[in-house]
Image 1: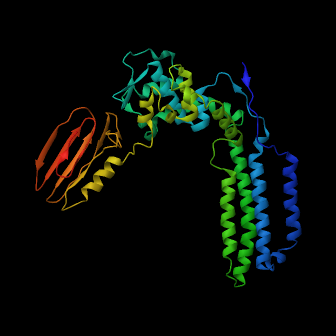
Image 2: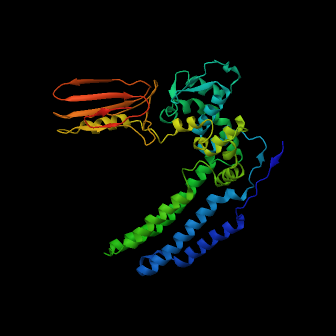
Image 3: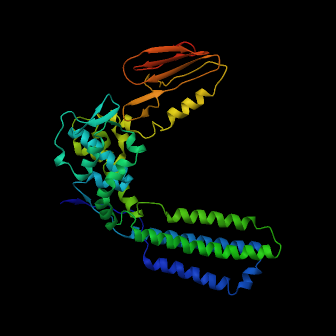
Length: 395
C-alpha cells in the first residue's frame, strides 16, 4: 500500500540533553542547599530567587520528559484512511458514532424524517453486511430518535465502546494515544515535580511561620502558580500523545480541501466520512447532508430547557407574559430531543392575568383556551411562532 510520509517539523531533543538538564538541577541543589540551616537562615528575597530557579528548572525538565515521544517518527499516512480510526483518535467513541450515522444514512440503512428524527430506512436493507460498530448504531435507531440523543444518552457510546478497542490498541501501538504506561509515567513526573516544589517551599514556609514571619505571600503565590503550570505541562487528562497531536494536525492540513469537495456533486461516501471524522459534523454545512449537521449539533439543545423555561415563566404573577420559541429565520429555537419527536414549548402563568404559551413541532396549528381565575392560551405552530402577550401566537 502506498503511503505518504509526513514531515516532522517538531524539534527533536536528544536524551543526553535531558540528562544534562537533570544534572544541572542536581548541581544547583547541591551547591545552594549544603545544609538545611542555609535555607532556614536565607534572606527572604534571596530564597525567592533560588526558589524561582528551582521551579523553572523543574517545569522545564518535566516538559521535556513529557514530550519525549516527539522524538519518534510520525506514522505514514496510508492512501486509504479508515475514517472510524481517525474519528476515534480525534474525539473517541462519540466521533465513531457520528461517522457511523452519516455512513449509514448514505447507504440507506438510516433515514431522516421531517429533518428531526433518525430511524431505520423504509427499504429495510439487510444489516448482515454491516460491521459490528455499524450494527450497534443501526440497532440503536430501531426506535426513531433525535440526533441529539447521541450526545445526551450514553447508551449508544457504551454499546460501541467494546468494538473500539481495536482502534485504541492500534493507536497506542503507534504512540498516538497515551497508553496506561505513558499515563503512569506522566503521573510520576508530576508527583516528583510536586514534591520538589512543595518540599522546598513548604520547608521555608514552616521556618518563616515558626520565627513569626508572616510576609510569605509571594512564597505561597509562587508555589500555587508553579503547581498549576506543572499540571498543565504534564497534561494528565489528555488522551492523545504529543505525537498524536502533531499527526492529527498534519492530517487536517493534508485533507482540508475535502471540506470544499463535499459541497460538490462529485464527493464520494468516503469523502463525507473522512470530513466528519476529521472536522466533525459542522463541516457538513452547505452540503446535501446539511440537515444532519443542523439536527446533530450538541449545542443547539439543552436537556433541561423545557423545565427551565416552564419554571422561570411560572414564577411571574399579577402580570401577563408571553414567551415564544422563534428564531430569526422563523424556525423554532431550542428544540427538545425526545423519542417521539422534537418540540419547543413554553408556558406562562399569572395570578389574575393572562398568559400565552407556544409549542412548535409539526405542521398543524390549533388553539384552545380555558379560564380558571384567569385566562391562558396555548397554540401550536407549524413553521414559526409569533405574537405577543394577550394576543396569542400566530404562524
